[in-house]
Amino acid sequence: MNNDKDILEDNFNDSFEDIERILKPLCEFKASDALKQNVMEKARQEIHPSRIVRMWPWLVAACVIGFLIMFLKPPKNAIKQEPKEEQLVAKAKTTEAVEGKQGDSTPEQIDTNIETTIQPHAESISPKHRKTRTTAQRSRPKNLEEAIEEPVQMSEETRMELLMASLNEEMPQMEEINTEEAIRQIRIRGERMISMYEQNDK
Amino acid sequence: MNGRTEQLLMELERIVEERQDWLFRFAYMRIGIREDAEDVVQEVLLSVFRRLHEKSSMDNVEQYLIRAINNACTDYQRRKPLRVVPLEMAANVAIGESDRQIHEEFIRINRLLDSLPLEQSEIVRLKCYDNLTFKQIAKLQDIPEATAKSRYRYAILHIQQQIKKKGSKT
Image (cartoon, rainbow over all chains, first blue to last red; front, side, top):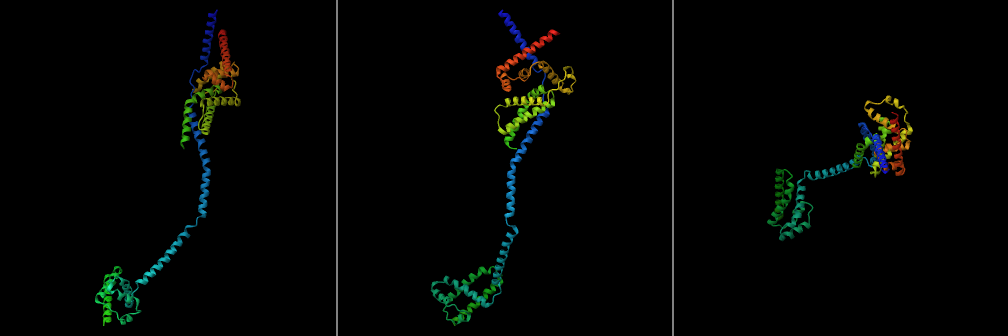
C-alpha cells in the first residue's frame, strides 16, 4: 500500500516536472538593437536640460553684473585726456626752463655765473686762505666794478686754485656743449679772471 | 558632462545589456506585439535611470525592475485589452517573419494557460517562464509565499488534467 502511494507520488512529481518543462520557453527572445540605442539617447537628452536649467541663475547674475559694470564705470576717453593734458603742461614748463638756461648769455652773465660757481668752492680751498674767501663771500659785490675796486688780497696759489675749481665745476656741463666752443669760453673766462685779479693786485 | 553623469550612463548601459532580453520576454508574453513590448521595456529602463539620477544609487535594482515591468504590462492591458482571436485564426495575424517563432511561443503558452483563472496563470508564467522564485512572486503579488505556492500547485494540476483529457480524447 505504501509502495503504491510512493509510486503514485513519484508519477505525480514526474508529471509535475513534465508540466513545468512544457511551460518553459522553447525559443530565445531577443530585443532589437534599436531598443538600447533609443534608451541611451533618451537618457542623455534627459540629462542635458537639467544642466541648463541649473545654470540659468548663474548666467542671469553674470549678465546683471556685466551691465552694472558697463553703466557705472566712467568712460575711458575722459580718464585718458586728463593725464595727457597734465603731461603737456609739465612738458611746456620744462622746455621753457631749459630754453631759459640754454639761451645765449652775455659776458657779464658769464662772469656772474663764474662768481656764483666759484663761491661754493670757497670751502674746498686750503684753510690758510679760507678767511680771505669767506670775507669775500660775505661782502658780495653787485657788479664787477665794485669787485675790482675792493682790495682783495689773494695770492697766486689761491688764484690758481679758484680757477681750477671753477673749471672743474664747469667741465661736466661743458661736456654737453660743443668742445670748441667750450674751449673758447674757458679761455675767455680765464683771461678775464686773470686780468681782474691783476688789476686788484695793482 | 561630469563624472557622476558618466557613471550613471554607464550603469544604465550595463542594466540594459543584462536585462533587456528578459524584460522583453516578460512584456511580449503578456502583450504579444513586439513594438508595444519594446516601448514598455524602454519606459521601464528610463524610469530606472531617472531613479538612479535622483537618488544616485538604488538598493535593489532587480526588484524594482520586476515590479516596474509587471505594473507597466498591467497598465498596458487595461488601456489595450488583448484582441480575442480564435486560435485557428491566430496563424493569420500579421507578424514579421523574424517574429514568427516568438509569436508561436506566445500562442502555445497562452493556449495552455487559457483555461486557468487570471491569478493562477500569472503565477505560472512568473515561475516557469520568467524564472522567479516563490518569494519574489509573493512580494510582487503582495500575497503570502504559501498562497503563491498553493496557487501554483493548483494551476499545474489543472494543466495536467487538461493534457490528460486531451490525450484520452485522441
